[in-house]
Image (cartoon, rainbow, N blue to C red):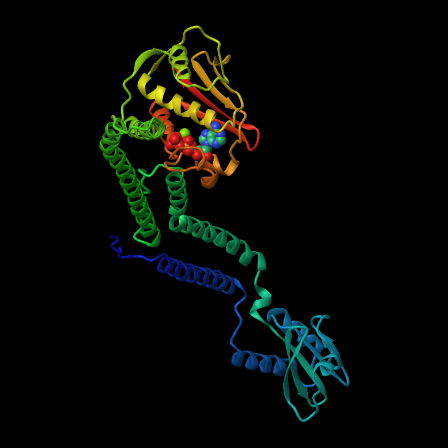
Length: 433
Ligand code: ATP
Ligand code: MG
């Protein structure tokens, strides 16, 4: 039974906290940098003082304005000014717009004494004199900000924040990599492997569920195997009784048929029990120096199929193996080659490796139906048969190769399969001395 684990820090909570922290950091850093830049920018008096200052300047210059005085005053005060009267025209900066230009932005008449006008993204104050106008450029602190001094630190801070964000996201989603590796291992048949993910979040929960699932599947498979084995075992006694009773059947033909059926059933049962034993007689192989050439010849001799061609590069080749288990593995591989070769020849060979003298390669090649690419990794799963309806005609339980894999894994032997549907299959087993 699955118990639902409590999640302390949901991934969504983590993400929300992360988003809040980074929003605050981004805002604080932008605020801090802009503030610093404003501080550095030329300090400007507030708007109310500005009007007063402009009035003082105007009083000093006189009415009508005195251009010489204006030059003197504006040297000390950082204001730009233009005035136009019927008698004089003056501007401290030739870029300042004329009264006509400002009027084109916003029309005004003589009744207005002081007008604010925005032109070309700058502000100007127009003050009406008795005989003409004076224009003050309204200084803006933004004009004074050095854009580079803002952009450069912002780029650095954003890069640091982006890096921190990357690290945090990796920390939150890092376990996904472990999860996918773990799931891959489990799906490749290693039901014992466990996924270790910590984090008190949904991913840890998911890992725990997957672990639980693989334990359950492995339990179910074991139960299925045990049932199969128990049933096979129990079938032996009634079979023996049938055999005995058959002796009393008088009609020879019926007697013969029953005997043949019983023999077939017995061989199926002993095959199943044997595979079970191969799997369960201890995890450790009982290693002995064994002549693999002799062992393989021996296995082949037990097949009544007359199209097995055997070839060996060696007369004798000693390997440290568990002979009983390797015999079972080889018998299963050859049995498949014969079963699925559709009457065509089966080639079996023992060879070495030119590059690595320690290696011994056993190849079993048939020219039968072959296996589809996507089925190849599945055929090692217990009870897996490629085409169940077609395979019904050929006896088997899909157990052979699962045993083969276990035995070869115990020997740390490498297994390769090359197969093309319709052309045949080659099993290559490499033993390292
Ligand atoms: P069992 O070995 O338990 O009697 P089986 O032969 O069906 O039954 P495995 O030996 O595990 O089971 O093989 C699994 C499946 O792989 C087979 O059912 C068959 O579909 C496929 N297979 C194995 N060897 C070959 C081969 N040489 N050519 C084509 N298909 C093969
Ligand atoms: Mg088989």
